[in-house]
Structure formats: structure tokens, C-alpha cells
Image 1 (tube, rainbow, N blue to C red):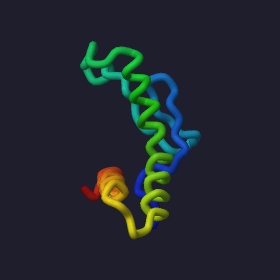
Image 2 (image 1 turned 120 degrees about the vertical axis):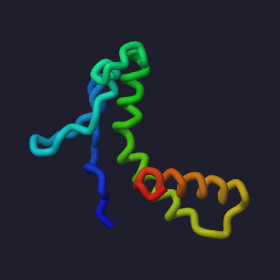
Image 3 (image 1 turned 60 degrees about the horizontal axis):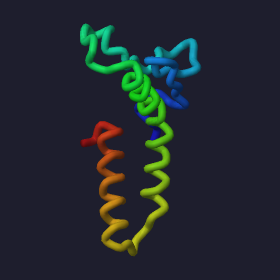
Image 4 (image 1 turned 180 degrees about the vertical axis):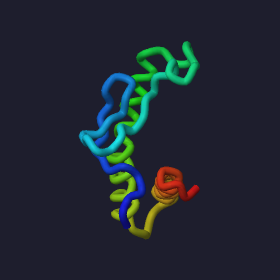
Length: 96
């Protein structure tokens, strides 16, 4: 199945989340000032948010690998971890 999101890798550059492409728009900004919300986040928080967002394609791929690799039988702790991972995957894919 082809991903619906912009393929990675994504990079955090200050407040921006960017990709290396001249033909595709960058992903987003975490600069609250651009949305008329000054003081909502300090610089460190805004940049940390950009790094977290930039890691999304790799985290999505990792969760998919983990959920595919951990086949039954599983103990209760593993089942809970898989359920949480599957819920996060559904949210990331717009299915939840």
C-alpha cells in the first residue's frame, strides 16, 4: 500500500519541517507567531515539536515493522504494546 503522506525523510530546520524537494511543499512550521499565538510556545518547545514531527515517517515505518514482526503467541504486556502501536498507526494513517 502506498503511503498517503509526503514521503520522508523529513528534516527539522529551526521551526520548519522540510523535505529535500523543489517540487513538493515543505511539511509545516511550529512557529506559533505565524498563527497569531505569540507566547504559546517558547523557542525550545517549538523546535522540539519540529524535531518530533520530522521523525514521523521513520516512527511510522518502525511501528509497522514492530507490529508485523511480533506474531502471536504474546503475553499480556506484549498484547498491550501491540494494541497501543496499532492505535497509533491508525491515528497516523487517518483511520482513527
